[in-house]
Amino acid sequence: MSDPVLHSVELTKFFPPMRRGIVGIRDLMDTFRKKRGKIKALNKVTFDVNRGEVFGLLGPNGAGKTTFCKIIADLVIPTSGSAQVLGYDVIKEHKKIVGKMICVFGGEIAMWGVFAWRMSVYRNLKFICDLWKVPRSDMEERISFALDVLGLQQKREEWYQKLSGGTQQKLYLALPLIVRAPMILLDEPTVRVDVITRREMHEIIKQKLCKELGCTVLLTTHNMLEAERVCDRVAILRQGEIAEIGTPKEIAARVGESNFEDAFIKVVGKVPEAGEGFGFGPPGPGFGGGHGGHGGGRFH
Amino acid sequence: MAAQQGMPPSRMSGFRSELNVFYAFFYRSLVQQLSFRSWFVMRILGMFVGVTTYSIFAKVVPSTEIAAQIAAQYHLTGKNPFLDFFLIGMLVQNMVALGSAGISGLVNSPFYPYYHASPTRLITVFFGNNAFRYLWVIIETFAYIAVGLTFGMTFYMNFGFVLVLVTGILLTFSLDLLSAGWNIITKTGEDPLNWFLDLFSRLVTGSWIPVQNLPNWLQAIAAVHPQRYVNDMARLTIGGNAPLREIWPQLGPLMLITAVITVVGYRAFKYGFWKARDEGTLGHAMSGFRR
Image: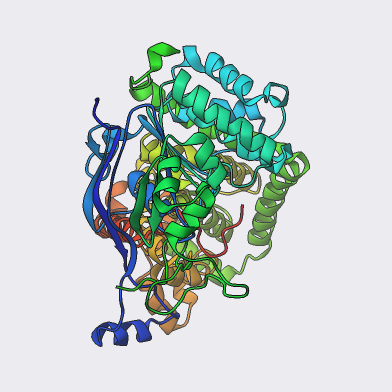
């Protein structure tokens, strides 16, 4: 078996406690009293993603999915452990990975900065070609290929802002289709699209990106049906730790459920009661959603 | 297509590809700006009306006493010393603004993660992202000069002025680096040092009012405001045609201060960048950020 494209070894991240107030005197006093705990986002996350597979990273809000993606993209420094993409350390050798990996953040970090609102779809894609240094000779072919695959050829000359929200989201997939990086990181790519577009996007990820272009995909999602349909294997994160890993069918069988969504709920261990919410909770286990999207509520 | 499988993607490399990215950024900004046609035309007209207003103001406020003081202090050779004093101040303030807000604006924007993950160098992204703004400042500068000359402004172009201008731009850039280091952590959009300097910039830097005509306590603030020295030297060179050796006693220390602030700013920025990555807030928008 060939080397894994993504290799994560005991990747751990504890975020420093949130700053409170304007002056920070409370923070300072609590620091001296040693009251302020760090927030656990990831704890010893270990898994491999093999070449050509779609690997799903699942978990409830605040489980650490986006934090993991941000570490891979060198946007967050891990506390300990390491991760490698194509054999390069994601933090120490980030410069060797750029261009070989592309990250599409559909969830927390929006895409609207890369796509200029009052510019045509074609011009926007050309800009992406330049930014990712696609050879000039290949540009037209790659843009046409992406637009054909996405079924957006007729929207070529339309301004990005005139596209519907779902189409704008769908256009995110043009990035990996154009750049054709060996490693693709898709963070909640179908978060705002309707079920038909979602199905189309599943096909694109599976057939075009993986089978045709030979890319490896790490995908995060909250949609269990999507995970079942698209992912070869999945890992379920619970409070920053890997709770289960395997194919969706294997996991469902392992926890004794007939469908994957029920299995997922059983694994993550909690169904919110009516009115319970997912706020930034007191110390102790819980879901937590505060602190800018990374796992809040789990003090260490 | 199969040839792509498992292989790193083919990419352009070298200076030419960076130039392509720079142009792509510039073109994108231009298309965006020109897409607001009426607003763009109004902006151009507004710029000329603004510059003309300053010129008229400077021309109709010929206080002979102050004008004589100004002419003596800056060795101004023109017929209307206050006009020269005022327009050169505005012109220089406009030009040194080239160095401001570029780094903080870029690194704190929510689209930064995409640039960070792209193979384009950050310096190209920085200059490309600001290219349109640079063009706009250059157009404004020419407008200042053209309208100023029409109203009788004196304008000497000499090497001393070029050095003053470069130092002024570098100083603003290094202050922006310092600011970026602060903002990247706090997301406030304003750091105390630059806030202080901006707060008093019109009052104590001699842009509008000669420093010696200010109350003593404001003169004390003016003494530590670096922009004041840039303005003074610009007036000596553009309006008084002073040679480099004449301004060197002021320019030398300013260059030294600029170098120190650049080093401190770079360290602050590096620390801020690291801290934001540690806290996981890189790419989180600054307060008040609007698309």
